[in-house]
Length: 77
Image 1 (spheres, rainbow, N blue to C red):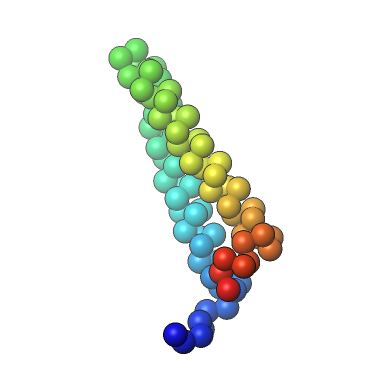
Image 2: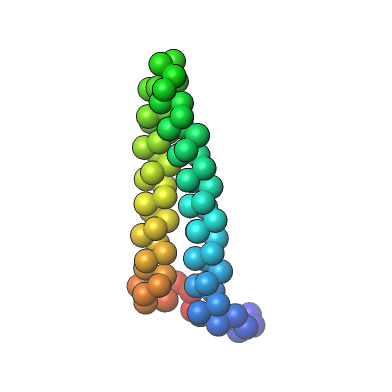
């Protein structure tokens, strides 16, 4: 196996950029489902989807914070 040519910082930047794109998509989905809260027939399912997308976004935010530190460096070496 050959040694990686991508630096640790570049790897972290790539992953953070990806997670930020995921969070941008999450925001659009959250906005979509927040609008559905006004519809009585969609209210319950929209509430669950808002919860799920919020948890997903929070998880990504946590991973981004860890990547900005050194907690995950061993995973990327």
